[in-house]
Amino acid sequence: MEMKHNRKIIYLAGFLFSIPMALTSYINSSFLESYVSEFYVGIIYVIASIITIWSLLKMPKIVARLGNKLTIILFSFLIFLSFILLAFGNTVSIIIPAFILYFISINFIIASLDIFIEDFSKNSPVGSLRGFYLMVINFAWVIAQIISGSIIDKSSFLGIYLFSAGFMVLVLFTFIMFLHDFKDEKYKRLSIFKTIKIFIENKHLSKIYLINLIVKFFFAWMVIYTPIYLHEYLGFDWNSTGIIFSIMLLPFVLLDFPLGKLSDTIGEKRMLIAGFFITILSVLVIPFIKEPSLWLWAFILFMTRVGAATVEVMSESYFFKVINKDECPNEISFFRNTFALSYIIAPALAIPILLFVPSFKYLFFVLSAILLIGFFITLKLRDVK
Image (tube, rainbow, N blue to C red; front, side, top):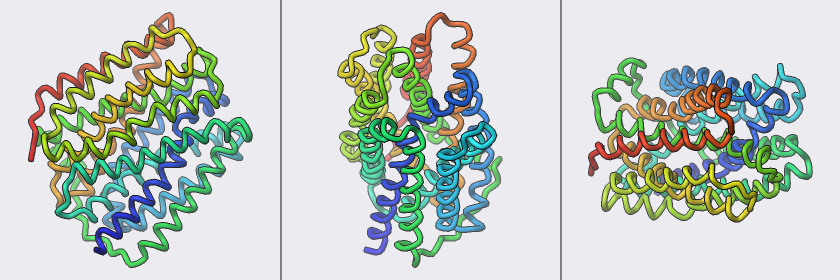
């Protein structure tokens, strides 16, 4: 009963944390573009991601020394601080370091929440549990997109970052007040090289790592470049963009839990194949749509997320079925570097493409080709019990 209660607290904390994360993720690139050129936005993401990957490799040592609870409290405060700096900074010398601090901290919290879920989920069906957790997280993303446009219209970016800072206070309150009796497990510490060796030698882990990296690459590419494309090239205002994104994210709420339960019955491989197929086809359609129709774009982006939601929940379910429970923080922190790594690869690939291709829309053809690689890796995957 205590484990179930603690799991509910983590669901609540994950929901509260996801609101500010969702509010800011789709406006960060446009916010940074108001201080630096479109070209340098990608470079800032690359720098932030490199530092984040290095930091995540150190995370098992940090968690072993401080404990997971103190770690997540520390980085929740750092996100709060970064939001305040982003709201009132007004100069490049403050905004860029604040954004990098924000980027590092959200990755630490995502990994810390995973460790909590793993600790509080002994002997539970993995697919159902991960699917429900993702559903809770993504419900927050939908709510955030519904309200983001009106907040920007009334108070510009400052309002978004201040509103997000308020939610981080609630996250801090949740961990301090509701998990005050929590005792950390003694987490096993492995060297970075031993962790990498585990992933290389275990073909289940290495393939699902690559699949997760590709779906995270999809998210990074879309988060950075879709708002710019809709806002700057098609002329959508922020209210319309918020409506489009809220509809776009509905598959994560509607599909995550039932798909997670389904994976416990039939395995993940077939659903991963279907997810990649749907995503590739829907992304390929994007460059051919020239009409700035809100409902048409909402539908197309909705379909991209039907596929992506399927790939995400299946990759999560598969990974947590094959990890070694005794080496949980090491394997989770390494697996979670796919988020930051995708924010290195995506801009690094997009920047030269933008220099040489005649139109911004060609970015989506490239994205389809990358997703096709994930499709072929999935064909070689084997289901596990």
